[in-house]
Image (cartoon, rainbow over the protein chains, first blue to last red):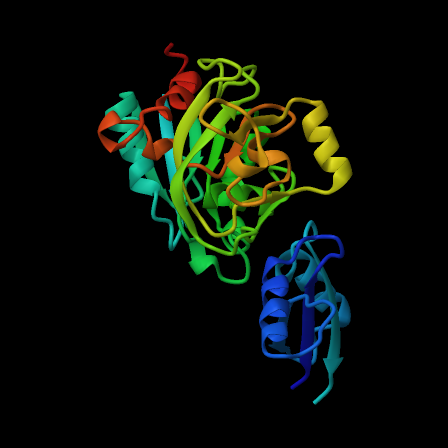
Length: 78
Length: 228
């Protein structure tokens, strides 16, 4: 069964308070890091009949909020 | 007037709204389950606060597709009043009935406190009983109340006086310190271009009786029913 792997990220320029907090925490652990942004990973098991167009539509209509987020995806065949 | 209060799985401020309308305002409120396709002749729709669908994926992202939302969208399109409170505001932005989006509070904390709101525009059905510059004390209870809109959208909202409420100090000064969640321009509530759909993060329905700390929210409901 094919798998659609969708990644949803905050748009550039939108304050990522969680990312900033994680950055600070990593620095406290002694790691050097310039920036951290946190997104979502959504994995969908899809029937063969579901197309890339369908996944794009799912991503636009539900999986991401176009005001705040971008998305990208890849489809892995069986 | 008849107020229909939508209940989604996870809504929790629905009965507060029903009580505020029935008992504080003295008009009729009915709860409407999200799977219904009828607003039962409601004049005003309230989309209440809470955690519809557990805030899964994003606050309001799933509720916006509930069966009742077709009727709510029709109601809004017909120019009739819709008020989205807290999660309701989030649902209305996800449904594109209001511009912008609500995201995580900049302080990353769930905020449960009283805020001061400055009334910015009294030319709407929601604020006509109020005065410009009036300060309302209302409770907030949210983790994702940070209002964002793209620069051109924000400019249009501001240019057309569509911001109804801003976070302010007790004297009505709109300052960064008075902003609890990082909302752009201290925006706490906005109205759509036609002026019939309001979304606000603070809870007027929880401030309709002095016994509960403030009855400043009653003015908004009195504005809607024209009793002032």
